[in-house]
Length: 248
Image 1 (tube, one colour):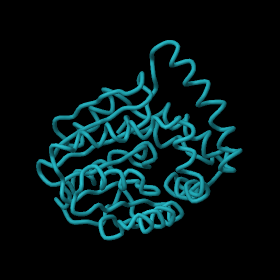
Image 2 (tube, helix red, strand yellow):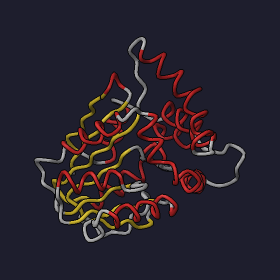
Image 3 (tube, helix red, strand yellow):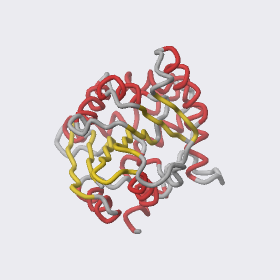
Image 4 (tube, one colour):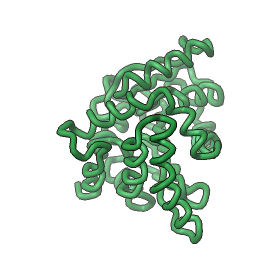
């Protein structure tokens, strides 16, 4: 589909012959040791508020079985366990480095019986149809190599009446937030990435991937075309972030 064409072109390492998926896994393996710190530091802690607002969309559903796609170090899964108290949460990610850090956190919190992190690809989710009551993705869908394929897989493993909640960066349009955001993302973020995580490429990729990703009404139409229903989009913090909700 044309909606996904731009997403595929944006990769972390332009000169690499690896696929986008392979590059993403390598990139996150490299920055896993500083990922959580940089998330909170660069967003000045606002990302925690965004995550809480996203999880509120699932409160009335009271999901029992949850899937957290592109779980990374499990931050969103841990917050979901604390706030929603499902029976079990499974987190999947293609970066073993991120998963290793996540498992350490989960073990220290005594949540290993409630949260399982495992290697998994959004485009080939290794669970039967209609397995989960709710699916979450925080800042991960823009990294999918084939967006519609990943969304279709999530639809497949979601139970009828189940809900998908996507939290993703977006581009603000309000002056002067737009100008400050572009300056910060384009120039300051890569410098912080180079200094703290020793990876300028990863944090140069971030603004480019956000810029190219379908947002707002365009993303809503993609979800509808994939087969989701009751699709909504809510922007947060002057449009810096968006919550997409959809049901099966």
